[in-house]
Length: 162
Image (cartoon, rainbow, N blue to C red; front, side, top):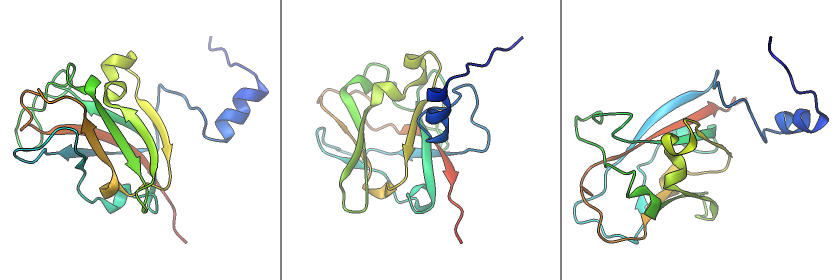
């Protein structure tokens, strides 16, 4: 027998996209995003994502983001080993920004690893982002295997255009 919490505050949160059922993401789409650090990439400098107009705020709402680690995915789409980030991601941050490069959010990379969140995704509600203006940045210099890709699953809901 399933119980439903009856509360006006929960109805308000659900109606205003302030919470959602973490056990399901029906109706949402997922895009695998691969960030390849350039050869000789310098730490403490932004590593920008490639342009993806589908992930721009004009076209979608980003509802969740997760980093895929070696535990989840053994090889990237081009058959490279992803960064073993469980030790590295605690020193990095994902910066989400808009067209004017104003910061919408700063998310510690360690919170985007589902294993660190008891298997739950990091839910978001980004509507004004420009994907090519978003980046990650690390605050340490001794990252091993920095020539490997960093893989993200970005969940989104397309916006209906008139």
